[in-house]
Length: 114
Length: 117
Image 1: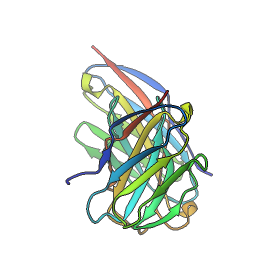
Image 2 (image 1 turned 90 degrees about the vertical axis):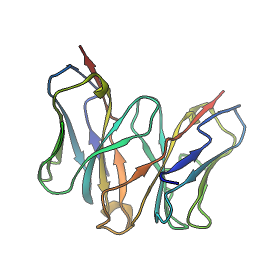
Image 3 (image 1 turned 180 degrees about the vertical axis):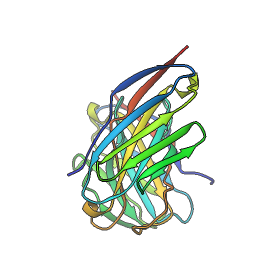
Image 4 (image 1 turned 120 degrees about the vertical axis):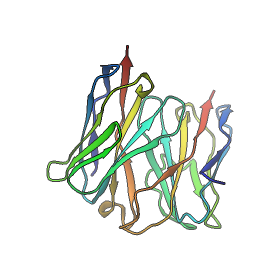
């Protein structure tokens, strides 16, 4: 089966750095996504990793280790507007019967305070 | 349109009422997904369409839930005899391709917020 784990809640200070971890188990790994979701809004795409290593995009970076089933999202220079839920999602091919299926974790609610 | 469009944005239904939620994906997108997101949770997979074919409906919680995409574009998620536990946001997403090496871009709609009272 598939399982995705991430912390439920995190808090951080404006201007600081925060790392949100995600571990996963899946039989047909075909990429890992991070989405940001503000309350009452749809998820918005942040990053995508399919190979091991670090992907950097401005203040956001995402890391993947396929052998460990592990990823993290790193947010630098935190701003108040970064307060949101961060969703780790794994794209699974093998267990879905021939298509790419996106499976989400429960999300990490990040609160940034002054 | 430029993005995935869903309607209605908000729906309040009385318990036992039938509801229909519409998704208009980006033109030309082959893959279409429906997800259910309860408050404080991540989206849960409901069903997947490749063009007009419903290839996976394993996530539909009961036989009261039905989805269709008859012409391979617009999709409708229907919930019969709604119950309070059906209250959630229903998200539609689409992507251009369907093969294993498809790109990484999956577009989400704004969601339909269903409250059953």
